[in-house]
Image (cartoon, rainbow, N blue to C red):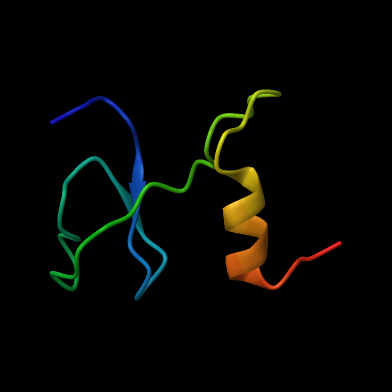
Length: 53
């Protein structure tokens, strides 16, 4: 287990575990991805979200 906090998408509880201790659902990291000016896949990610120029 890493030392990063995680969030349950079902009941919005914060924990350090891979699974929520309250409901048992898988937790996700609430932190956004790191920003890089040389983002190789940024154009693909924007197309997938529907953000086109």
